[in-house]
Amino acid sequence: MATNFLTREAPAARPNRLSVREAVLRELDRVEAYPTLSATAVQVIALSDNPDASAGTVAGLVRRDGVLAAAVLRAANSWAYRGKTAVNDIQQAVLLLGLQECSRLVSALGVKATYAKHPPAVRERCDVLLRHSLFVARLAAGAAKLTGVSNPGAAFAAGLLHDIGRVVACVRCPDAFAEADPIDFAEDDGTLGRERDVLGIDHCAVGFQFATKNTLPEGVARTILNHHRPAEEHLQRGLVTLVTVADRVANHVQREHQIAGYDLGACPFFATLAESCTGSQEKALRAGLPNLVVKAIRETRALLKSTA
Image (cartoon, rainbow, N blue to C red; front, side, top):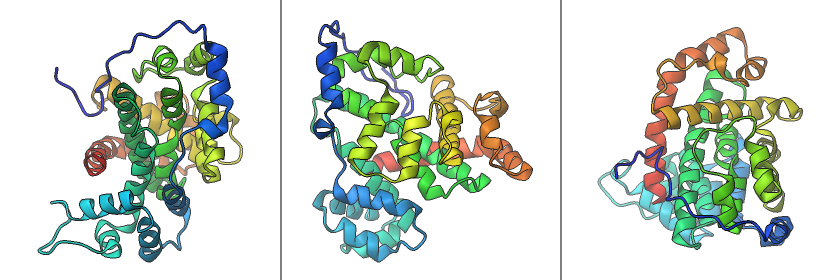
């Protein structure tokens, strides 16, 4: 069966009836039972909003984690980056990839590691979620450049992790998650309520618990918590709304397989985002959206290849 990198879905699991709902909730409430990011991934994510970060700092962190170090070297030696000689030094690899791109690779690998040792069906569904989150992250970072609402690095990190609660729920209770979340890119105002009906908790609350456990930056944590209700966010409203709009655009593209004719003004959260923009920035985002989507798709494919 033909698939598209943005739309491929895992085979639907047949869920058990949730006679064990209370047990599932107990598991979700046990923070110590949650998947965790590696210390390296957490530190690299924290650097995403630090203008003083250097290649030496990132290289020093990457060297501590053999799996991440190998992935960075592999990416630096790929056809897209390799020169005439092989790259064997981590700092040289960071410089070749670029500080920002290396940080994004390490962050994506960190997310993938949270479910890498779980059964194939879980990994397949989480791969779909990672693909979506990378697409949102690329869109959010590109929109940040056009609007100035956020640092692009912070926007990427928040976009990458906005749906981490879905990954955690899939890992902790795969059958219930399959019933609660079809991963059909058709999210609406009832999405969180449907999750609570099945799981007793929604992915925003699960993800915020994950963010707390992993001591993620405030902007990332607030985005995880409120990306379905940005009007309720008061501390990081610009960043949260930026990712929310990117998420809605990504869902549209993954459902409809196109961006042509999409009206940003029809997005229920775009007006809130526009409050953080000047008129020229809003106009730039509207005009630049088609190119931004195409670029984000291309960059997502490249990053997925590097994390394979």
